[in-house]
Image 1 (cartoon, rainbow, N blue to C red):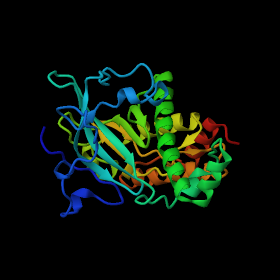
Image 2 (image 1 turned 90 degrees about the vertical axis):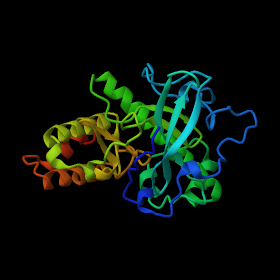
Image 3 (image 1 turned 180 degrees about the horizontal axis):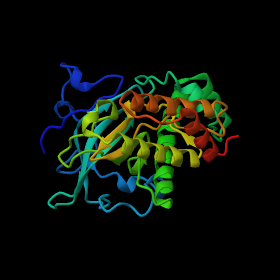
Image 4 (image 1 turned 90 degrees about the horizontal axis):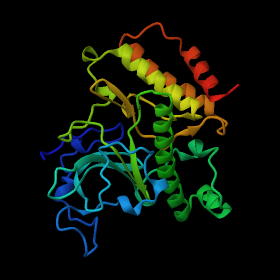
Length: 303
């Protein structure tokens, strides 16, 4: 498989850093198990995730569940404030069974920057008061708990949104969540079979796109989000991908429960404003921003 093109986010791009060494050239510290596979970086982790830590049923046909499969690191796709995303292939050696996935790995407490988490975490609760106190005080243990909660929140949201779209007969507007293991989420790779990632909406050449169709896809996705009680929380043209005409919303760790969060409507309105501003700057007209926010709030049951 040839080397992959990187896509970056608004924080930092590995493609912009000439000193960055390809992940495949770095020492392998991923799987130190002496019983590791002869080929690949680790055995498939599918059997390590419980049924509730796997994506919604029925699993898409492309999901590889064979225990003989191995995971092979193919390089870094992007890096962000809280997590890095890698390209991973899961394949059964000696066969044609294989698939590319995006592996999102949240960083440990010493290397991540959850600098905006307080507002997003309002309305989220954990059962143990000890954990809640640690999260509030931002102790080392509390930061680890926050990382786990953000990973769990993103995986849970992806599952809920995938199921909600399916129940409404609507096309999926988020990547399919394959599984979660600790603070690693494996999900559908949005791009070409040779590993070229789909461009972000912000980088899209508008002359090659149907803006009205993309806007309608996005509004449908926002309606499904609202109907399930969520706002993205940080939606922008930088965390929306466009692949072969399909609009895909990514980066959901900060997803907001707009009913439980006292600022839920503000997050909802900000999401709409951020994306509508981009579309309007490129020629989309005739959209009433306040009406869209009111409609989404009604979908969520907000008064």
